[in-house]
Structures are given as structure tokens and as C-alpha cells.
Image 1 (cartoon, rainbow, N blue to C red):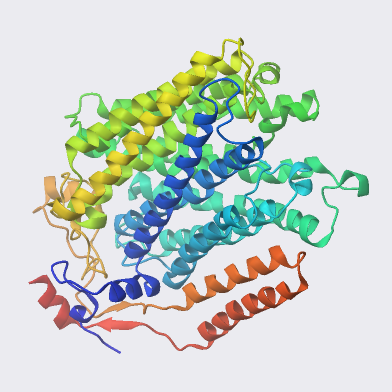
Image 2 (cartoon, rainbow, N blue to C red):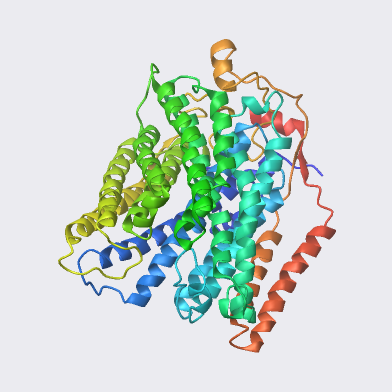
Length: 624
């Protein structure tokens, strides 16, 4: 079957009905449109998690406040952490991976486009399932780590929504990890060896390995918790022979690699950004690749540093303490290589670069306090205080969130064909940057003064008033920065400057495509002649990429509604699992939802779907 490119592409100047656009996104398997779904879905949950954070900070603005009740506060801290980690940071990073990685390695799509679509819809419906708990009797309230026995004994259905929502969303993330691994291994353009890949592509590859090995531990833990809560098992019930500490091990065997799943993609994009805007090749490319690998490897060796106070004993504590401190070595290599990249370069300061520069001191502070909490004797003092809150927010916000904003400013022209306004970008950065440090730097001292985490109120006359008020004011500064960024996005969509193919004078392959790229990315895959292939062609060639293959018909996959319907089936089944212990009639939803998903799998298995071909004549016409 062949089809013309004009049949599949609607020019940005042409207006389509809302229904046509909606159907296009519901059925798309194009990695670039799936990136949009991840971005808008993750962005929605980011705003939701931010709103929950503001409610937390309003409650703690003054002593003995009663802005929300103790029960609602527990739900807020649980949903804030869960939403930000699983439903905001992870999906937005997957958006950037989907948008940039296939272009960086010279691929027309990911290896399994259907699976890519299924992954994004599982994330969407898993997130919705978790958040409708607010309207169905109460959200989960056992903390984002859901420690047993608190989670097994939590009344109501909130923790059940937590279990099923994360199971469904986590399955989608696991699919993405497998997909990206196969894509990078099998679909690199001619000449694109592993050691010619941009650092962001390397980071995506190594992050996908982490996803592949880390998420099953969470899946197992959630299954055990599901059977304890929904079917009367006793995996975590000490009275019946269970073990509550096993939950902590399972959770943190996932949870600590998850920190690197969140930060390694940002390390990759910072490397690309520093090289681009310093007009220099990344300093120490090979050492950066191996440092990334070492960070990922050590990330699996340190999970129990979250558990120093549970009584593992001095030998286990010492081993995990030393392993934790060792991660500072490859991380330090990266910091100094980024500084060396900028040293002597022609550095251009814009919004993407500001976020990247702001990351270095912020993340370094988080790493320094990480060494402090890795010291076992000191951790007995820091544990469960606001010092730990400050530490991990310096890592997650100062690292991952700064990276997300840097990546969005950098790749926004490639994703949407428009350039974000620089003035608004800088306002957004400075308000967020100042607010971030106001919010969390003071929390180190609140923790050292004895303020415990997860507490609903603090008392008067404990010298905690001023610090908490400063922290709350800072949170609103951060909110202003986010609002300015959102306005900037809408402004660029309506009035923004149209982006050329290469707005930043880039070095890598994504800047050789149109902005935004056509759905098949290239009519001919580019030939890679070294690291920074576009820069090589600019400095040594004629400025244009050499084709790495003869012009021929291009094969592309068909869209499908099946991933969406399959995800709806799992959503319905999830509700059935949650409510079957309330009323046996919900078994209808449980088995009905599973049957719907299974039917979609059978249909997909029996389909003779070989995609379609774009003929050479149409490719030549599009090129002209």
C-alpha cells in the first residue's frame, strides 16, 4: 500500500476541525505527537502537584494553622510526592525523549510505535485513576512511599487507588524503556556508532536500562500490597508472619534508581545545551559516557541508605554508606566537564542556558547534603526532618525540574515550530530560581532545628515561624515562574516567531529536520561522519547533511485506536479491583475491563498491519 505525504500531513497554515485533531492524537503512533501527549499530560499533573505543594506550604506558613485538616494534609503530602515523581517529572522527561532521541540518532520513529502509543495512554489513565480518588471518598494518605503497615491499615480506598493507578502508569513507563532500548540499538542512522551519539541519546539509553531493571521491583511490591489490601493476604502483616521491612526494600530497590531515572536524562540534555551554546565540543565526551554508566550501576547499590534507622546493623549500614558516597565521583566528573566545556567557549546566555547554569550550583548543594545524609551517624539526626526534605528537593527540583525547563526551551522550536519569548523565559527563570532557593534552602536549618517532616502543624515559640514563612513565600515565587512559562507557551503558539530548522546553530542531527519535522522525519536518513555530525558538515562540508541511503519509498506505521481502548479497559478493570471488596457487582467491571483489553490485544495480534509506503515521487515533491 502506498500513500502520498500530503495525505498524511496537514500544513500548519490549514485549519482542521477539533474532532479531526482529537482523532489524530487518539490514534497517533508518531513519536513527535506522542511527545506532545506526554508533555501536556505531564504538564497537567505538574500543575496539580504544584497546587498540592502550595496547599502544604499555606498550611505551614504560620504556627498551629488550620487551613486544612490533619487528614487532608496527609492526603496532600502523599499526592504531591506521588504526582510529581510518577505523573509529572517522568512523563515530561519521556516527552523530551520521544521528541528528541529518535531525531538525534537519525531514526524515522521508535522501534515499536504501537507500544509507544500504548505506553502514553496507560500513563494518562493510570494518572486519572489515581486522581479521581479525590472525588470518590478520599485520596491515599500513607505518604508517597506507602510504607507498611501504614498503607495496609489505611482506612478507605485511597491506597487502593494508589496501587492500581501506579500499576497502570508504571506499565506504560516500562514499555517506553524497552522501546527506547531497542530503538537505540537497532535504528541508528548510517555512521551513527554508539560513541558518536549525543549525550542525551546516551542518557536515554542508560535511563531505559534503569527503567527495565528498577520498575519490576515496584510492580512486585504493588502486587503484594494489592493482595494484602484487596484479597486478605498477609505479606506485610507481622501478626500473620509477614514482614513490613520487605516493603521498604522493594520500594527503594526501585526508588533510588528512580532518582537517576529522573536526573540522567537531564544530565544528557545539559551536556547538549552546554556544547551548543558554548560553541564547543563537549569536554571529555568519553568520560561523560562512562560516568553516566557508573552512576546508573551504583544507583542500584545504594537503596538501603534510605533505611539506616530500621536496624539493619552496622556492617550493612557501612556498606551502603560507602557506596552512596562513591556516586559523588562520577557526578563530580560531569560537573567539572560541563565547566570545562564552557571555559574558553563563546558562551551565549539565553533561557535554556540560564536554566542549565542555575542547575549547577543548585544540584551541587543537593549532592553535598547527599553526602551528609549518607553518613550513618549523622543520618540518625537528619532522618525524618526537614533537612531531608530540603536535600531531595535540591536534587529533584534543582536537577530534574531545572532540566525539564532547560530542555523545553531548547527543543520547543523543534517540537512546535515556534520559539519561546526570551524576555518571558528569563522572567520565568529568575522568579522560579529565587523562589526555589527561598523555599528549600531555609528548610535545611528548619530540619537541623528539629522540625519533623510530615507534621500537620508546628507549635509557637519554637523559632520555626520565620523559616516556614520564608519557605511559603518562596513557593509562591516558584508558582509565578511556572505561570509565566505557561503564558509564554500560549504566546508562542499564538504570536511566536516561527522557528527555522536550526535556530540555535546546533551540532546534532535533530537540527537538520524541519521545525516541526514532517511525520517521516527525513526523506533520506543522514550519514553521520563523527561526533556532532551537523557541526562537522558546517565546518568541514557544505553545511548540509550527506544522505546515508539512496532515495527510496519510505515505510511508515499506521495509526491505531487500539492502544487508547486497551488503556480504557485497564482503567475500568482498575476500578473493579478497587471496589470489588465493597460490592461483588464490581467484579463485572473487573472482568469486563480485562476482557476489553484482552480483546484489543487479540485484534492487534490478528491484524495484518504492515503500514504504508510514501512513494519516491512524493518525497521529491515535498523536498522541492
